[in-house]
Length: 197
Image (cartoon, rainbow, N blue to C red; front, top):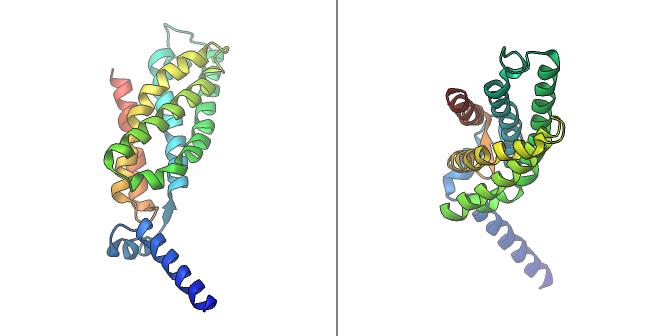
């Protein structure tokens, strides 16, 4: 009797997990057909990395000319400071993207409103932390300005990326063929918008 009950509980647990992962019956099949599936954590880590590279580079190019401007600090020191800030944003953005993605799987299955609010919250956390760490390379005072610049960008980027990820992901995985155009599209659009301002 105990053996049968244990088997029934295991089957019910498996079925509940399958229903949680896949919204429809065809979703599991679509996930199994992916050539190079990326889990949500890896997708958000790479998104944080690219957001930490491209957007700060656009901001530094716009404000400081990335150390090559005739008007503002045309020195190798300014170039090295920009590279240091950009590197810090990229590394920390990658780590933060992975850390903050833990709740994404649950919220992607919730209502659109909850998902968008949660993604704005993680965007705010990502922007404040990554911008502050990147800005520390600018004599410490840059931490305030870094967070000030990064939070609005991340509050737009994370809900946009999360919404598109939700539409393309199957069972917590997204195919790399869909991921790379998506991640470059979101980050480069924001970077181009900053450069065009």
